[in-house]
Length: 319
Length: 290
Image (cartoon, rainbow over all chains, first blue to last red; front, side):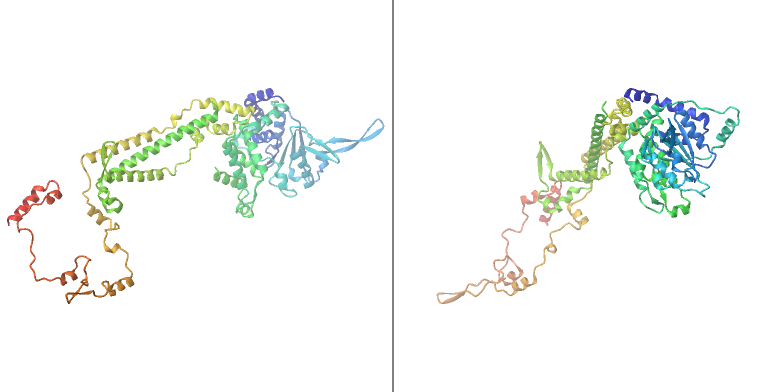
């Protein structure tokens, strides 16, 4: 990647994002925040956990994004009997020329975008198979380690209802998700539009806007976005304040949250056509970055307080 | 324009402006305070202070002008108090945050200027683009926009008004009719030099003084067969006292060296209050005639 390509990408980034959102909007109705946050996670080279009730278009959204970005997309439907080898791949015996030898058959994790649907239905053993892929961008099968192709992004979904027969993700794994995105029901107008679009004979399709190399350029540019010292300091103070145990918080966020919040804010600034991080970016990204990293106390759960309320309270206090 | 240089220039200008506000406040407070002191005749209270008592009424010649000691003290006191008040007034002044001020004045630079300033050492496409944009934007910023003209104008008006008030008071000799005695009554804590202020003597010392025979043994000499007592009478050498007067022989009539008549004395005239010489003179002449 040379600097001339990067400069060119930077110059057209604004238009590129506008076109990307427009193309995705042809298929996905509303959910602008969800789409933006998924793209932010991709730009940060992170992973996202999407939580929503069934039928809100999680799979459609992520497959649309992958198509618009010209990336390989694979989907894993997680179930309790799903085995790690079903994700990572396994060695199979291949016969050629009268001899037999083991050949590695890659699993669905070998893609640019992997959708792990209903991840909390998979067993902890299978869930942990994703850990190495998420953190190290590689997988190990037996004695062999395989590097995953870049960009690599895991989008996991989970259902907040029907908790029976599920395995909640351990904190260590939750921390590896850059963002936890909540998808809400669409508005009345959006739902009318959804009904109109998906009851016709012609289904909406999406065009390719960003190629793989351009996406890598954009990931590099995201990290280049400068941030002021006082905003950086605010981020640290926000994250550190989650570690102060009080009546609402049992455990706070790790330093990974500080890194994630700054990176996510940088990506948001780039998407919004800014060449600097604003406080507005920090405030917008604090919720998806922190909400799965804060463990609420029994008292706050009893009172029905959510992590978003705690984050809002922290943001109001730390200016 | 280099962003760090821009911020330094703005900071220097802001510091200069702040010094101007402080100076203006000081001068206004000083003038008002001095006027207040003149009106209240604080100078009449100065002789009550022991250190100033001896210098009261002294005139100093400074650059050909004769300035009374009281005026010098009032000016110095006003300056000192004004300095203190100005300090208190500006004690809570916030530290000059140049970048914040510029960003407030120019919303287009909000968060951009500080980011560019903090990342002057960062060399990449995005940071360079930001620096370039900010540099061209700050070229239009002039330090004079941060000069608070309204505040300075108001300060100047108050200062001019107080100077005019002082001039009016001085020229028309307007002041409270206070004398050192009035101040003494008003300020009971000022020491009046009475014996109450003196430290108490040790009782043992007093007793020993009463019993001690200071004159010692009687000195008697014989002159031509006659004994003459040379001992000093009690009270001798310590001035006149009641005891001494009682010891005196009163078998003679007291006489004056002067005729009982009206006499003139230069000393009376010298100490006459100005403007009352004729009244006093006629009073004494009338007394002499009677």
